[in-house]
Length: 108
Image (cartoon, rainbow, N blue to C red; front, side):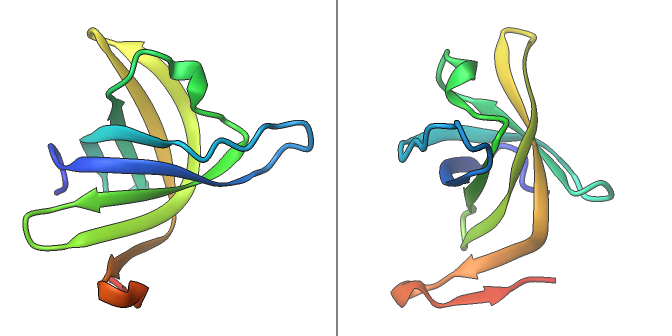
């Protein structure tokens, strides 16, 4: 559904008490979207997988040709597969449209 679209991944908050908040925007691409399980597999465009925390909540912005969507969730797994870095991102509460002025509308 969103395969191949570019993604900006941003940490929203840290979950663990001893974690370090990272306000960097990580560039990714949607590798696969599992609609039934609400997972997005993201190809991380940088080399350092450990830059992505497993103890944080992230906001995932997906750019399509016609709209900008976002969802929130957590990275459940991070691993290297077929010469690419993959993140298994668990979506919480679906997708929202981003409009000018930062108004949002929930998508089905």
